Amino acid sequence: KNMEFCEKRKNSSQSCLRLYDHLREVGVVPKWKASDICVIFDQGEMTDEKKKRISKFCEKKRKPVYYDETLQNAVAVHFSASIKDYRLLNHFYSYILFTDPVQDNFY
Picture: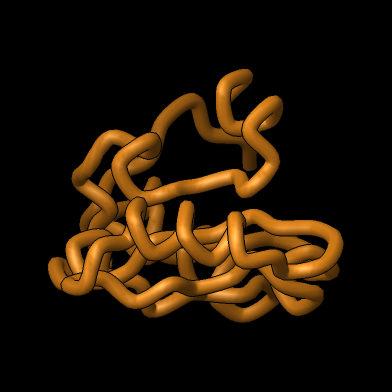
């Protein structure tokens, strides 16, 4: 049955929870807290210049997390926004860095 909307209630006939369960089952579910991490998209050799940009962007309070093969090859990447600690309630540009300045300026 196709639904035009879903409700975030388990006992609803149009519950979103089945969809969320499916996404968590087939995809990768990063346990990222936006205030604790910065996501780094990098390709090529890690140079001193890239290390400096990453260090400056993440500062000392956030841990760099690299977009890697696991995420690249995943059927889906699902962010569990229903779990309070893993909501990404920041602007994407505050925790995502492309080490290539051309790509970073584009996004």
